Length: 317
Length: 290
Image (tube, rainbow over all chains, first blue to last red; front, side, top):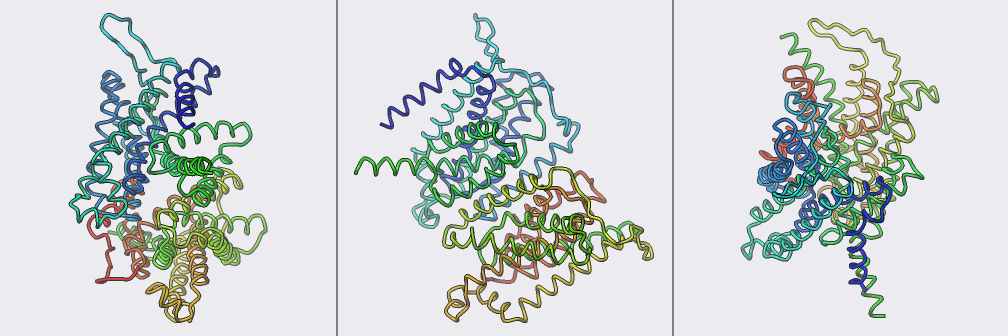
């Protein structure tokens, strides 16, 4: 049953550009993909270590700026830009993780918010580097230049869709490998009972910082993908709304599951677009808030775990 | 030197309202173990309630402020009864996420209701500043400072001298024992949250006329409240009162001597520095409950 559903979903995802005629709908799917990478990255922290980071937009923005600056000002290849968009935020995630992961709960949350606030202010005020609120226009499109073949530009939406789809698949598989490894088990042990985990020799700081590093790198990578897609980077990438959206996607989809964030990301990018016809942007955000509360009240585990439980009940009865 | 004095004075005047904001937040955290991310929204609510009373219902300015506080406290009580009470016993993270939901919902409801254009609140005070030797102050700011100070004092007296205050302090120290002694925990929680929301609304009602009103004004207020609370130690009343003044002065000095673009960075850096160096706050005693 779930295998069939999975197969249909995969086939639909792979053939989407063929049957999604409206370019705006394809745009929505591309954004869903970028958000899926973001949600997977946040889930690594929130779902598997239990630490809520409300500063993830900072890594997303750093990734966007890293590739934006390198490809526009230094005219480096977008591929190196994307690499930098992963490595630099990962390094920042390491440093922040080292500092912040001494703290837990509310203290950790506040530290991550403050960090994101600082980075955002720097992006607005450091005019020489970031061009301030005006942003950096003209970020080049990604191109695939294999020797002996004509240069393949991913300028079109359909082509970019496949790049993003590949990124989602890569992120998903990486998260799966990580979660099923020794590291993943250590993280879950720390989430469930830190004292007990420490007593069997799990170094909390080491594993949590590792998770922060990978999570930040993934968020940065998503930022890089976003920059090359919209071809423009501005301080808007640091908006708190991005962080909130990620949190809602992870919590609603099901934190601590692999499929949850992806389901959440697709649902919460497609749903607002579907609602857009009926409601303005403010109504959407209002609904977002109410929806977050409703999910926490009625489906505290999230959609994917709830569906699984329902399926199990259906099978046994 | 004169400039320094002026900055210090401005900082203290502003800081008193930050104390109000911080006290409300710290009480809710200390007593209920709720990280109230919607705190700034009650501040916004207070500011808009003043505006509505003044401009739409043409109520007297001095009556509009207590009215706004009542609206804030009422909204807080409703929020506690409908959302927080059913969630008691849930993990602090779940409650935190619900409060984030409340924050988003309230802010966008305000955006829908009032529109995105900034509004200014008319006041009966003259705009000409009062010159006191080397420094000058707007009369409105003096009024705001005095009312804030009075409210902080009133909050302190309520906690220290009344029966309700004793019940609140008892709940703060040991919830179960307080319940055994006949304190209605449910009622104390509702009162505390309404109290915190009322103080935030008071800060909004007082600072609204000083600055401009816009729907996302609460974000910065939340942030300032959190930095004040962290400075004083989560759950520490006196710490929050002093922390507010420190924050006000630090902000003015930062804006005056570093760069006004980084004015708000002062708060962020303060949170980061205090959390990393002295996570229990600057004024922490050896060990506190909460």
